[in-house]
Picture 1 (cartoon, protein in one colour):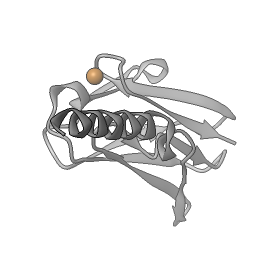
Picture 2: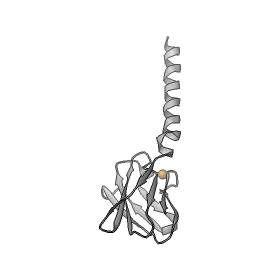
Picture 3: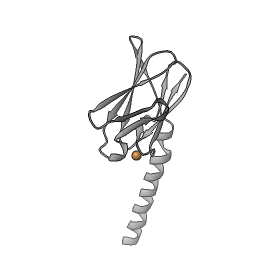
Length: 123
Ligand SMILES: [Cu+2]
């Protein structure tokens, strides 16, 4: 009986892990809200980035707001390598990063250890 239970729990864990990696996280994309000629989008930081892809409109000044809800050291920093940005998210709940939108393309971001990734798509 305990063996069957162990197998069921193991299977449930595998399904949960697969869902975590291949489920909604890979497909969701966030869009921005444009207010007073400024666009803003929020990314929730909790066990990763949600959404992990943010679509921004080209030519409209943009800000990405990181809503810190994670207490692990892993996600404590947000790094935009191509922008030379490395910010500590643990000092305050929300951290804003200005995103250049003068040209279309993709801007990647990651945690301080380069384990979790996300990207901004300007188009
Ligand atoms: Cu990390």
